[in-house]
Image (cartoon, rainbow, N blue to C red):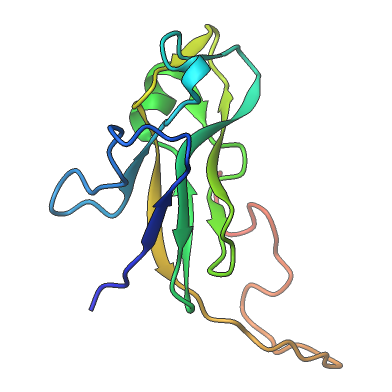
Amino acid sequence: MAPILKILREDWADAGVALPSYETAGAAGADVRANLRPEDRASGFTLDPMRRAIVPTGIRLEIPRGFEVQIRPRSGLALKHGITLPNTPGTIDSDYRGPLGVLLVNLGAEPYTVQHGDRIAQLIVAPVVQARFKLVEALGDTARGEGGFGSTGRG
């Protein structure tokens, strides 16, 4: 059974902006939209090259215990405009109840304007397993051993 994420709109949010939704039957991510503050709705929010900013969504989430929400970039924005997330994937923990903002960065060469209602990121709902941590004297051997970055082949 699919987990249920409860959504609360901020008092200032535009109720006409769609809630997160899966755009196709096979979509892994639900698109989340910019819900700009009233003073920014007409002009949009411009993100200059190499600038980072938190874009509001106008919502708060209640995520069931045992799950997280990951915030990921939209591939079309990344390819066409260089708009991505600097901390991808961002994690929203199940005990967070604050406003959902999406941290965007413009890696493109031109300013990009986020319009009110634009799809700006994807939400992925994922199960969480909390590990226990144990200090030991040695770790088990593997064929890879201590090989780090790039040690398993080209690239």
